[in-house]
Image 1: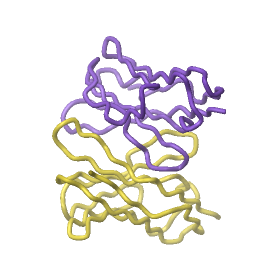
Image 2 (image 1 turned 90 degrees about the horizontal axis):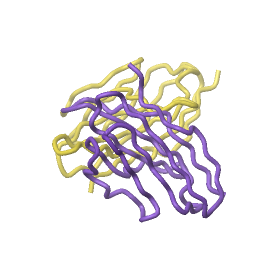
Image 3 (image 1 turned 135 degrees about the vertical axis):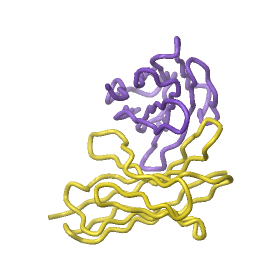
Image 4 (image 1 turned 120 degrees about the horizontal axis):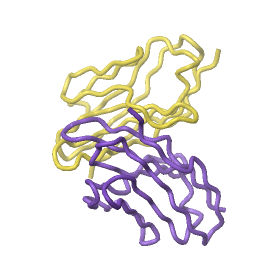
Length: 113
Length: 113
């Protein structure tokens, strides 16, 4: 089966611009998560979708971040406007039901200059 | 809240050396414990896991034992190889609910020939 795919793999933008990250989960996985690792720190939870519904968005840093998962398939994470501190690696992960394991994508490295 | 603390890196070892990466946790419930690995240019992969006290997770020569009394899950390998060079993340998950994973900061391992 295809794994979790993320696009783009790397994005360099200027402060104030907008960037949209995309995640395609494993087919059939209802649970989709976004995580972020900033400057070598811990990988922090951002939010969790079950199908198209946001179940937990307690980790979203502020209202410049908007996540969507229309139709319960792929998800997008938009940062608008981007700030320098948003630089980091954004990981997407998906999971099936029950105690099934998380499957991670390769991440998107975002650099805001 | 839940948290994971792991040893600072980077760790540099010679090939065939013994590896220990310390990990301790704080959790409100009874967590499952994980080690994830990120090889250069790749996404996070599950390396091993343990779901209850005294369980030993093992994979690719790596081992970690779930120690409830010391709230620890140290990663060990008897003889590292150059191909083990990667970033290793300790993590926990409280089962039930939506099973959010909490990660440590990651420890970069470099193995030199």
